[in-house]
Image 1 (tube, rainbow, N blue to C red):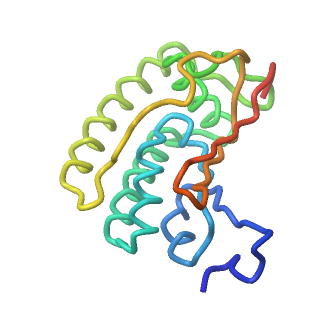
Image 2: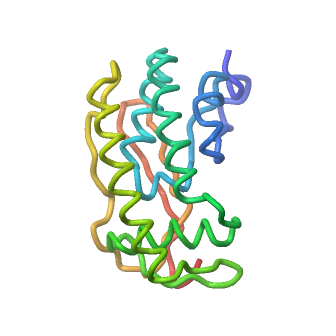
Length: 174
């Protein structure tokens, strides 16, 4: 029985990416990791494996999320790591590059290093995906460009018919 099964009018989501596979195994309804803004296919593949009962596949994608989290968080405070994630998203035109306090933007040199590390992570992630029993089915962005300069808190939910519903906070500032 899932954690939210006793309340059909209430859904439980895990926001901390390092707990995604564990939460799904315990029966939460979904995951809402900030990394889903930049690496949605990895997050979706983890979810799909968990829902299919492929615990090993879910854990393999969980390891990919942990590696990505280390890339963003390594030696950084929370304010710096969120700024780093936002800079990586901005480099792909998913949002504007600016952050507001208390977030701290990375230096131009650090941004270049982040992009190189992300490229290496992505190549390793793609290799692991090809070897997985639960591969990514589709990888795409919801927005290539948006009518708002800032976006955060991605939420994705599978509807009863199998369609996906996603929502974001979009506006002029974080």
